[in-house]
Image 1 (cartoon, helix red, strand yellow):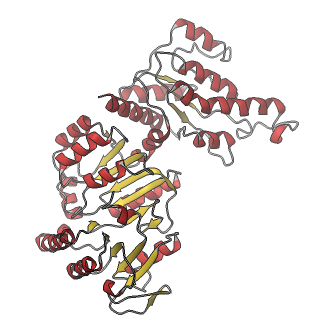
Image 2: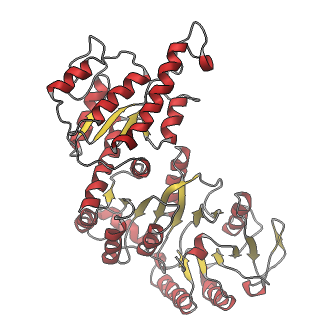
Image 3: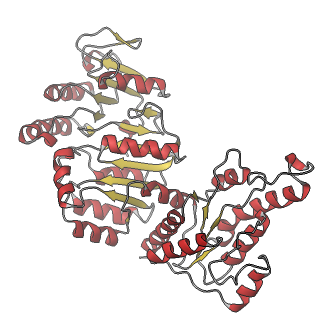
Length: 473
């Protein structure tokens, strides 16, 4: 924490290689913190001096009269050993290297990278990169990556690819997932994935840790650290370079050896890491891991009309989850809550296309959670009749029919209380996307995840099961 806090919570930053030309990295590293709320001091550094975006530009970091905690390096690679030495003399504690042209380019670049590392370690400076896209830290209000700062939230994302990682972060932000950190780790010349993991396990603003990894500098240490880390926080990992051609590409991308796919998969299982097979999946399942209780087993109850229930059941079973048939007494009691034409609710529970109130959905969900042989429920977002186009003929509370308001509000209140009451997770599926849906807002506020497909719901429940099993091992 002592070594990395100056990077993620700096009170002042110096931009080495700052530029007044829009579009250049040296310009963006000054502009982005300025326009996205960084409250510390910003010191542009360029031998030409002058001003950049209204800030005085110093010819050297040594000319800055005040203390500098973090250096952001955008200068050409051959200049970086001298710049790092000046940072040591200045007493800088951390650095973020945007600059490329190091080990990823071959032996000559590796020699240059090693020289920078030697100077930094001799002077007590820890640094991110090189060959990265920067960082975002909600705790430090520091944005070096994005045109618009991400929504602050509980998910930390560590990416070995800058551009691809930034793209995934923007998708996550667009879908409403909040980030505590984004770290483009690049070549890992100094700080490695293991050390970021050690830091984030102790970071109060982080609840789930997501990795995009191509290769590990010290795989054994990473998995040793991860095995301890998952006792405190879930770790979700997506790995590039799983094929022979992909492994070849990682070497020229981030100077990383992808390693054996079989060994990596085995170590993930042993350490309790949740591995995903598609790039969009980590944030989806992280949403469930942030806010839902962990299930005691793999047994899932499913609520959904017709094909929805069928597909959800298939998706769950394909991941190794169990969808047990309900006992006779449960079937009888559930049947009383369903329309007369609905099939017997043996699991999944099928509404047979009928309208149901939020209170009815909540009551069925509670009945399922109360079963000792059910560990979690996948169901629909409770219906808000106003959103579904059911028009009132007279107004009541908040413009709803009196009988509608009496079931929507209590039904929603009951629904969001259930995970905590039974200490079991609820995963929901939403069919219609509309603005100003109070039911959706209530679920999100309560940490109940909302997905668009049955497969997403199944993956989220599977992740909860996997993390629960890792906690028990």
